[in-house]
Length: 171
Image 1 (cartoon, one colour):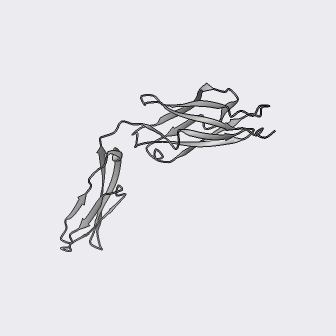
Image 2 (image 1 turned 60 degrees about the vertical axis):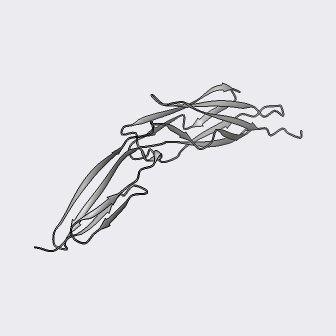
Image 3 (image 1 turned 45 degrees about the vertical axis):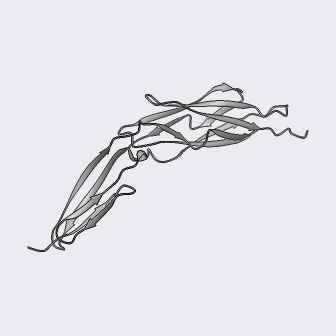
């Protein structure tokens, strides 16, 4: 119909910009950073008010190896209670990934209460998922420790040290 369309974009990656030049053209700019590796689906749309068209564009950013991130390397656990840390991936894996958490050393009274296996996908890779640790009661005034290995196929293991905050201090 001869009308110049308005251009829009949705699902812009963090740090990316899009400018509609109002002449039927636009500019998409993105200076990627090391943490931006992954797959991004960006939707470009054009509409003149009567007709519209859109295109979904997949952008693959190569970069950092897929890795497990932990919210901390040291977690406190109350004696007879719980403590938590969180895990996620550093980028979109492009497939399903299972992250496993297990005690690898230390006091056997410290266990994974929930979250021993965490599943990540292209939809939730960047969402922190909780791992709840538990510690039993004991009769001493020592702060026991245990190390938990956080692992997934093809990735470098991460380790979280749990320190039990003893309830018998001062007894």
